[in-house]
Structure formats: C-alpha cells, structure tokens
Image 1 (cartoon, rainbow, N blue to C red):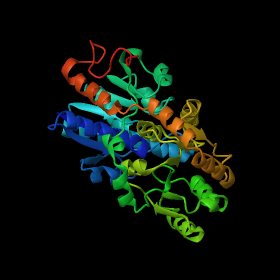
Image 2 (image 1 turned 60 degrees about the horizontal axis):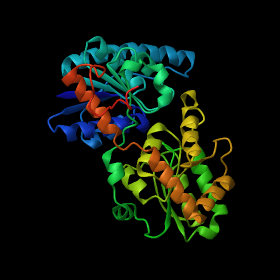
Image 3 (image 1 turned 90 degrees about the horizontal axis):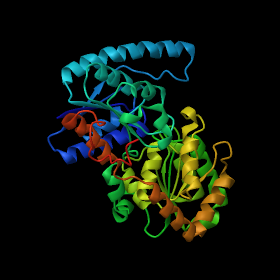
Image 4 (image 1 turned 180 degrees about the vertical axis):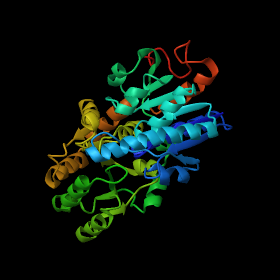
Length: 381
C-alpha cells in the first residue's frame, strides 16, 4: 500500500503527519509513505531527516496577505493543482492524507476528484479555509475538537484527537539529561515558541532572570530560541549566569518533554496535544494572530481544566512571567494537579485511530459504512 501525506509549512501541521506515517508503518511494514509539501516549508528539512521521501508542489498561503501577494498566491494555487495532478499520476497512491494548510489543498482536492480515498486531519477547533472546502469532498475527516464538528459533514467526521509520535510518550528522562547536557536534580524549564521560536517569549524569559536571581542555582532551562534570536538569547544566559542549553531548533522534542518540569510555550494544537499526552504543567502564551484566534481558545480550554496557566501576549512581561515560574516552582502540589489534569485531556492513541481510518477506507469503503476500526460510536460524530 502506498500512502501520500500532504501538507506542512509549520511543525504544527507536519508532526501529526509524521506520527500517522509511523503508525501506518508499525501496523504494516510494507506500507510506503511519501510526503508532499513545499520547498520553503519546515517539511523540506524535517521529512528527509525522518527518513521519508518528499516531493514538492508550488503553493503559498492566501489568507491575510496584501492584494498583490494574494494574486500571486492564487496563481500558485493553480500551479499546485497542476503539480498535484502530475504527481499523483506518477505515484498512483492508494490513499491520501491531508494535514491542513495551503500545501495540502492542491493534492487533496486533486486526489478527491481522481477518486483516490482521501482523509483530512483538523487540529484546531476552528478549521482553516482549506480544510473547510476539502471537508465536503474527502472521504473522512479526523478532528481534534468537538467544536469543529459543525464545519464538516457529520456522517464522515471522527473525533480522533491530534496525533502525536509514539516517542513523545516513551522517551526517558535520564537519557534526556545526557542528550542536552543538563544537570540532574535541578528544576528544568522547557521554553519554545514554535518551529521558528517566538521573540516575545524569548524576551520575557530573558528579562525574567532579573526577578529570579535567587533561584539561579536551583533551576535550569532548555530553550529553543529560533534562528534569529539564538545568539542574543545565548548571550543573555551567559550574562546572567543561568544554567541551560540554548538551541536554534530542538529536533529531539520527545526527550525535551521528558526532562521538563515546566513548559513555557505558544498554544498551537500540536503543542497542546504533545503536552497533554505527556502531562506537563505549562505556562501558555497564545499567539495573538492565529487564524480565528484558535490558540487563545486552545489555551483557555486547558486553563479551565486546571492543566495550564495562560498569559496573553499583550500582558506578557518579565515580571509576570517570573511570578508564574516562581509560583509553580514553590508549589509541587499545584504542579502535580496540573500534571494530572493535563494527562486526563491527552489522547496518545490519536495516531493509531487516524491510521486505522485510513486503512479502513481501502478495506471497507467509506468509514460511514459499518463500524470503522479505531473509531467507536462515541468517537464518531
């Protein structure tokens, strides 16, 4: 069986796709998985590193751009349809999986029109424009949140959760100390702002050192700063004498979660799926310009369940962040409750459910016909 997984652009779109690819291979070692994305997306560097073939289409985002860039992106969308048709005729896949975003639109639309079995994954409570269109055409929709149900046909929509890689929940803490050069026994704070980092979070963390000086010998950081802020952030750690490992990008996120006592991050859907799968207390700073404000909605859901604290981007400053870090450091009981609440929200078997829906399309026709493996009646909308 050959499966094409299309999409990427950001880690939030790509990593759930890698999780599904791994699960498909685990279920059947003969399955061939090929990724399709763009040359300028994160997939261009990550997919080859993960050992999967990668093919390219020409595509750009349309939403939120200037008129000139919107016209340019529209032309790229037409080119993406041409590229997709050529590519799918060459690859002749048995099934197509879309990860959302502009890189998935051309391949999934073309695949649906060519009658190839198609599945899309929706990570957010409010779907993007590409998935809203594709949801009417594909054979199955794998959704993370119940709130997105109303955007898709109910007879082919499944609540699976957002897939996370198996290694995320199985990595060991001891190995992580060695990998990142961190000290055992110190309270470890993992900081990251998404694939490219987040300057607001970087600045707030670095500024918080002035308010956490008395904890300098008791805490340490693992900080993904992004390429543009890497040197500045690393120099700030040296200046203040705080212990930690600073990287432009952390490839070994499973080990990063394993070593973390507290996470400071944005609130993308994939980040939250990983956080809840491993049950890590978190301070979330939602990205304020996310489509339909979905990061704020994602974060508040965790806060209401007691799994995270939320600081809005506009309210984020070093003193407020330092106070939250100190409060959680001083209260192990609170961290334990946050960990318990976080784990109760996690769906570590989401990748398996999506993979089973993909294979069921080939074995039993559309998922709405009879009982689909991995998607029980309570999971089916």
